[in-house]
Length: 566
Image 1 (cartoon, one colour):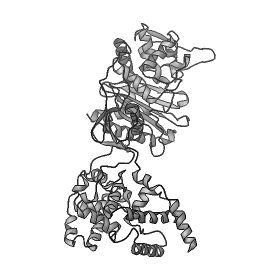
Image 2 (cartoon, helix red, strand yellow):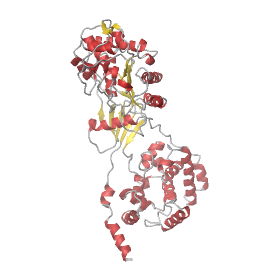
Image 3 (cartoon, helix red, strand yellow):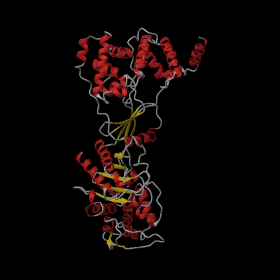
Image 4 (cartoon, rainbow, N blue to C red):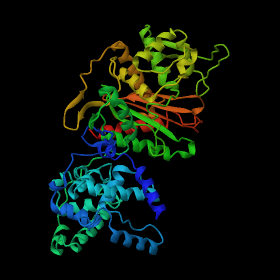
């Protein structure tokens, strides 16, 4: 007896700070919204307004009490009958099959304790339940429970769940909807309508029968409830946009700073293009495992720099590393347009000729990818066919610092080494930077900056941020941009980018780094700019994967999907 008292005293004096737990606040949620209004992702826990138990229809309370704690109004925080029944069931089952916790005990656990299973935690749960019963009325305990309980899909509290699943306030739930929510309490991730409508309805039938057994509804009311219509479930989720959501979420504080309330972030994401890009990339990589290609990334911008799609990898669940914004990869020949742009700025014309012949620069002896030499060729032919030697010969006649300066002001943010090999893209870039840089060409020489956030609102509708007009600044001469665009269009018509050719205007450039470690296609149409990269995280070579192959095919499929969605 003395030992028991000592142990109870120990559990009591090691309880968490009750006052702090009751008043504890949560991290504000951030909900990312696509351009069409559908939800992309929510970070943090989703709560809604506090609902008092007496504001709800009585059958909502009855559904929950009949299922979770039928003697709630008669016990003092601990139900010895339910506890004993659960223990017997667990013994016969040979495992943990039933729980005997009261609603008050669940409140104690949710407010004050961790999910750790131990004798000490269970004892503290009981002590806290007794304290709650002494401190609060049954209605207040129910209010705490209904506003703190987890109800699946990131929602906490009955009001948030009602809005999520039925697009209505919990004050307006019908009997069937009340039974569904009460049924979810047993296993929210399993019994919520998004996870499985069939399991949800089977569980709701159990709840309704519990209510009949508890004499809070009649069998006739139970049968009538099963014919009731449910509130319309919102098409709330954009598929396969986790990389985009992470990127936007990490940008939010730069726009509005720290905040202590829930916010909604309205973005530029195009759901159709996003889902198509993710699917096309994934299917292509999965179909080419024998070629040792395991990863890829895609960024799609419009001409204002708005991000329409972002795919940072093949499988977000396996790797959250965003290869669209974080990976540093060699662009290979996809960098050549910056060389030819500089040549145009220096007075060269697309029809001017340059020598495609063997050359040595110190110990470096570059070659064309096909090991052939083409002699004197025009600039437009050299770019269309991606001739390395012609491009290097051209580079040696240009101020390399101006090539670097062009790349910088057009959007390349990573270091570029001022060496002869820069013409072949032997440094590292980001996929999103390549899309941004090509967008300047597509824009006729005007600057763009990749962005995704249009507006930010607080939960109560107060506008915290709105993107202003796009004040474009001229980066390169419009005539040079137009000439380069025409040169890049020939890449698709008869050059290395033939597999990316579209039945409407398009321009772009292939890129393959040494030993096929990186393969690119970056290009644009009248409306969109898209950068595609394939490779491996460990930088191992791919087998026969070139920018002119799989990346060009992926790019074409994405552009066709975008065109079909217009």
